[in-house]
Amino acid sequence: MRKFNIAVIFGTRPEAVKLAPVILALRQQPAAECRVCVTAQHRNMLDQVLEVFGIKPDTDLNLMQPNQTLGAFTGRAVTALDRYLADTQPHLAIVQGDTTTVFCAALAAFYQKVPVAHVEAGLRTGNPRAPWPEEINRVLASRLADLHFAPTTASRDNLLRENLPAERIFVTGNPVIDALFMAAARVRENPPVIPELRQVFDNIAAGRRRMVLITGHRRENFGAGFDNICQAIAELARRFPEVDFVYPVHLNPQVRRPVHAALGAAARRNGNIHLVEPLAYLPFVYLMEQSALILTDSGGVQEEAPSLGKPVLVMRDVTERPEAVAAGTVRIVGTDQARVIAETERLLSDNAEYARMARAHNPYGDGRAAGRIVRECMNFLMLQG
Image (cartoon, rainbow, N blue to C red; front, side, top):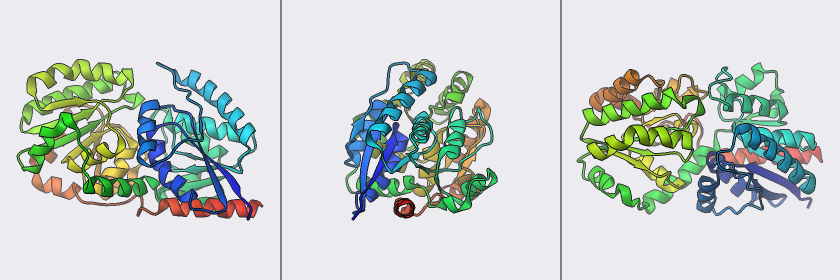
């Protein structure tokens, strides 16, 4: 039996989460030899996810540098990935999403005449500066890819409007839901211990308090956007002393500095603001399950939380994931301080409004996306000979 060499290339925690089910499914294919290459665009957070799913990279380019710029990382990544692909000559390269690693891997594969399969293809806001630089990364990746795995019909329609060939576009769902279902089953069976939040979880279990989960890291929110978000959180903590506000603060210095500067004193004063270090994947899934609602600018959380029945307020002006907004489980609130406060206050105070948003809904898949993606990859390779 002929073996096909398939390179799965990624660099960040979200990519690792979404590609882990694909890697595990590829490993079940007798005709596939799956090789994992990481750029380590996010070093520590990436390693945590790989450990959860039992994945060890075959090649670790280890490109991350302190305070790296996008331009410097792009140059290093294209050079390193070009060399990697020239040396290994895979039959197919699989990338996921919209990171700088995705664009660099797709470009390097194009230069080496290696076909590219793009997982989570077709997401669009139509605004090249929001999210920045992700919108341009995914548009360019689509122009370079040979196979497009769209999570939803809306994403497929975006690709069709860009005149990409219909026969190369497949609606598969998003493998983030596959990963979430695996992780949720594990944390329900064996809840992780997060020492600094032990009292928060004890109060939730006893029905004494609720918890709001906050995440934020988008570059377009750097500066005034993060300042507004932090001021809103401080005011919400003051208005709702019976609610805990938990914020795992991203490692990027441009996130950590304003968050700790704006919320550090309020956290010490109020006692219901908890600024914690970024959490590994399983503890973070547990945190989502324990939360009453989520404030975020993350794309992945918009996909995961509706599956857990958690209302999501998106602190961005646009989203490339309109399906959950249409379903009523996600609402865009931007970074205006007054609006973030008003929308959060409404969900914390209005039981009927909360109930309308807090219902499990899976617009992004049924947990079987990885199998569909692998099937179409193998069909493509068989036809290519």
